[in-house]
Image 1 (cartoon, one colour):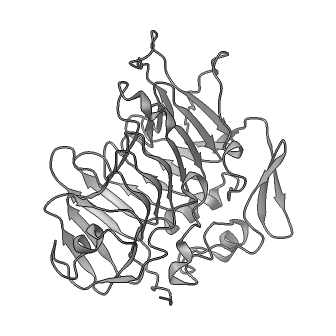
Image 2 (cartoon, rainbow, N blue to C red):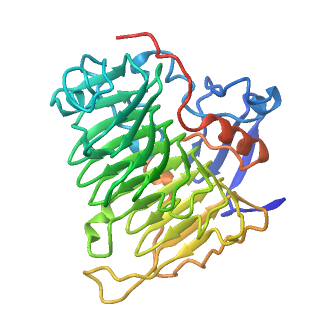
Length: 377
């Protein structure tokens, strides 16, 4: 069915608790021993649940248990942890009890929904700092326009749907400029006129997890363009996501450091992952399943404004599974370039070998989920 391309590190199944540990010098990473997978039992077999360990089993035990629990670069995001509850009571675009009214408030808020349905946004909805937009317990779809995270910090967006954004430069979630400590978890995104998630202009310390991307062209951009070399500061983690037949940009990266792990990308239209000017992409235990286009990794050469020579980016593939005739398309590393390892930035993260069981689980446990709102204030 495929082959594993490993960067030389040894993967060892811990038989006592089903965890996977990847051994690197002076560090180990894997799930804490008290974690168990959170998977809809009606969709996944008992055998699959037994062999696949997923992150975040603890975050639904209490309403505010999401705060500070992201894996990866967005791990410090606390959202509205220290603020009161704000109850969205209307599907109106604005006005009392609306999502927009809550997001514009300057104080920390934990935003929950008392209604289900679609919110038609007439313009970008700007999210201010220290906000959690928590869709658990309801089914909320944002359409028309998207969310904009502009010069803000500590934002958590959980369990929402984004569909049908229209207009020039309209993204599902636009993160720019200078935003940080962001966690986007368990959202479904499709069919916007521009990107589904765009992260640019020195926005950093961001995690995107358990999201489902479908019915789209330019899925995720990280790094604005070669003139914005300040984007060298950007660090993004993308894990346990399902890129479901989207055409390109899973993601496309300029300048940034990006850690991809345990994602499933299938049937892309141009490429799966693209590295451009000075980017560093660490692809770990992901599943790449080609359709008509067979090459997973693409490289584009561009020139940063403050450099004399044009260059491309780098991709390191460790433990990835390439299926259905997928060709990795890896280039050899530039002997003069340095490359980051995630353990330089965070000590632990949940990673499983890229297997058919993981693939099946990711098809069902990503995107908006019918989970109750946890108890708590």
